[in-house]
Image (tube, rainbow, N blue to C red; front, side):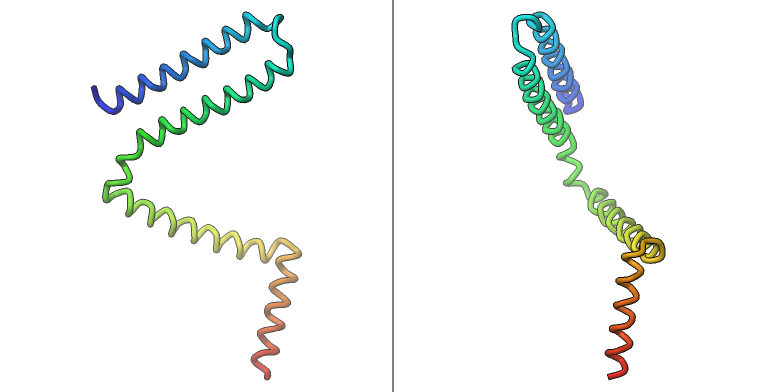
Length: 115
């Protein structure tokens, strides 16, 4: 059995358990108060989301050991830094509080150069 098969089996089991939970909630909707039902639904939703994310992280864990992963992370970080620089440059031009801050910094720079 491959890792992909195990991953699909776990996802199927999580989905099946979620459907059983929904069926039980529908069957007992008149016997359980609305507040209890809301809390149980929220808690089970959080637990279900935790297991889905844990299953995803288990599946992609071997990717961290590959050489391509490191180079792609470096590329991603470089791209992110470039977009941050562009955003900050545009924000200084558009947003008034950024313009005032940039003007103060420029004035402080001129004062330091003059002294």
